[in-house]
Length: 472
Image 1 (cartoon, one colour):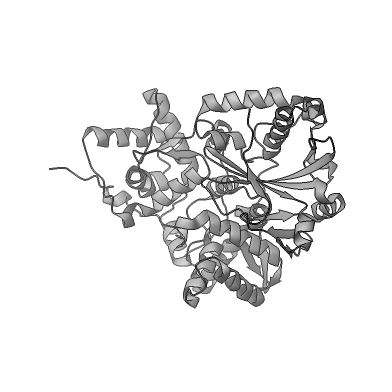
Image 2 (image 1 turned 120 degrees about the vertical axis):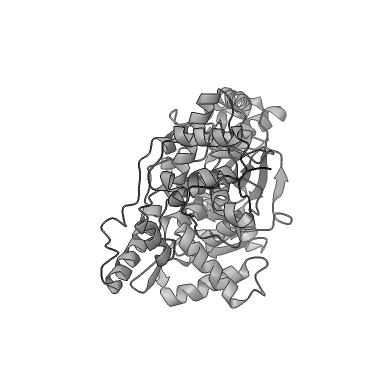
């Protein structure tokens, strides 16, 4: 008869967090909602809530949803992801929403989210925060999990993965970790000891869901890879990001100094202030390019040999095309597009034009990313819009700055949008020529933003064309 492992009662404390009820379609929802929030801009709170609820109802499948369901979506997005701060009667779109809407880099978004996330946090109900504070819990799960797996791989001299159940019972629900910061070496020994003793875990969905959620968020951040054996492993091509997590001591300090035994109204006020401080903490910048997605690492999907092979090919093909020799060429969609343009010209027997393909540094602010040539040697300019995510998404929306829209109007049919969708083992390319002309012919939709830019919406089945991205 098997024996089930139990956290000793004196150390048991079950962690939990807000669980969005749209988790199975989380990435598409986040893309859609971040665009809507960014488009609305700073608004009176009550008007914002009405507009926000209308936007949620417009998401596919929500048209007949109950009012309470729509409100739950809004509060869950607010609580978990810190997209909006309510202050002085206004709703203020925050950096995470604006950057996700503009950059469309979900991998980067989830890296930042995992990097900042800790217990307790401002997304929890005040009573749950008080319970964690009374238990002296202070725990950042992502660095702990990554350090544990790094130690495990060093100890076993091989790949090592953990399950949702192991993470739940040996990490998340054990005060020796979440309160006392137990060394990862000891947690690794406990997991191995339980294996050696053939101990089982309670794997009831309700029990392991919170640790499971967070492991899945780390997969969406490309920090971990879930394998068919349902174990989570380090992503070997994300070494730099993992090192930054493991060496970080960043922590939210908004709960320090709160006296839980003070007057009830004073405690309520202090927790409300900390809630807004938490949103500010989530949205505080980490530094230019700190977690920008390495597109090749995402595409090659934990295959370092393939990563190095494609990177070497890119370096060989596009070195001449870099205006700025400090630019990295293996981690941005623009580099892949430059390579594609050069290979397309070679295939068309126009090698004589390849030296005219140039990657334009962003600080030049010319309104496009790549200067290229048609096969007849006429100029074409390309704005690259890249979506980076862990799975295929609806990618029919993107943002253009005022400068990009003006430039598109000026160049007309010589202005192209190359819409890249990058996921593990797949890159999808859709081309839109002359977006302003397409808008004037009612072939795509354009919605002005409060920032001065525009949101472009199109149907990929009727607008533009798909083509294979040439890699070499």
